[in-house]
Amino acid sequence: MQSYIFLDLDDTLFQTLRKCPLGADDPKLQVRASLADGTGNSYATHKQQWLWQWLAQGFKIVPVTGRDGLAFDRVTLPFQEEVVLNHGAVILNKQRLVDHIWMASMKKNLPVYHENLLDLWAAIVSFCQQDTGFKTRLVEDFDVTWYGVIKHVAGTESALTPLLNEIIKVHPYIQDGSLYWHLNGNNLAVLPKIINKESAVSYLMAEYRKQYPNLLTFGAGDSHTDAPFMGLCDYALIPKNTQLFNTMAFTK
Image (cartoon, rainbow, N blue to C red; front, side):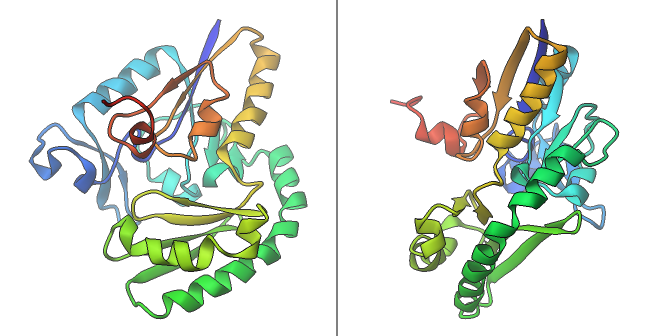
């Protein structure tokens, strides 16, 4: 029986320094990802380092991440299987080439949602001009604009909440389900409904089962957007004190 784990990265396998329990005082931290200038900005605790070593011994590991191609390239771990990028918009094969079947499907269906995304994005940008602390970005990767991300220099969800409540949640294209939003920490994303980790993982599972009919699957993730793809798996792994963990009935 072949075992696969579909593994979210940020806040599951590593995180920023401020999210590490002991912060910079932890002598066992290891850099796992860096900024474009080479400065380390994501770290694994001793437990996370052990987790990686354990998984690498017995699983085929498939990263399932919101990172784009360049940000994924700055992760230092030696992944050998397929990769899911941009919240499911892009799949790379083992040779790190685009999965053309998946990409063709995304490009065929995305235009229906593009105009909706840009309409909402115009309202978001207008709102954010009231506060210089907002940082807005349309994510373009592999020559396609996929979705939008908003951050705030305050670094908190509460700084993004007015934008979410006053503009995003009430927008017609959020209301009709063609677009959806996701907030986790200082990261507010607005995405077309066809871009999601669940669909990409389902596609890969079907491919893997052609080779391994007796497939054993695990899913690991920290956020609400990870839950759907984890629900496809035989078992789920949720890091403690994360968004997904805190919404489950694990504590008294």
